Length: 172
Image 1 (tube, one colour):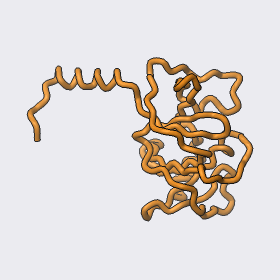
Image 2 (tube, rainbow, N blue to C red):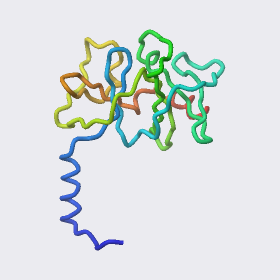
Image 3 (tube, rainbow, N blue to C red):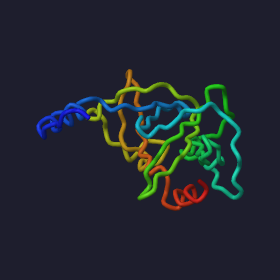
Image 4 (cartoon, rainbow, N blue to C red):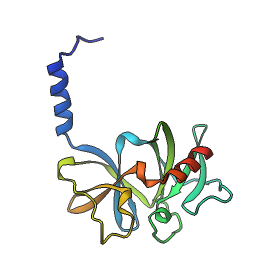
């Protein structure tokens, strides 16, 4: 164990971390670029067979096994109201750990492709517009920019309604 850190050192360390751009995993759905916080990402998987769940909502593709854990998989295209498409060799399942209330839920997001881990400047992010977008703005925490492109940062806690979260928790 190292030497104790003074309160001044803790404050300085937190200030430096706050000034550093946050890290995000960027993924593509249709023509859009989305982002999720890197610390919530547990794995990025190639497409694999997904076991269907009877009477599940259309956005819930089913379950996959990830290291002995059942993980529900959400089709982001369907959830966002976009047209369904066949999986390609670039299709990925991004496995996340999301805090919903007092419970941590493992969840897979089906994306058309995953691009990279990138930094986005939190200070330069904008609030989502209420009009002129093709999906619900309560799914979006902020909009950033990367290489002259907009990057939509998901609000993962709001991507699912409380009923949907309860359904996923019951099936995981």
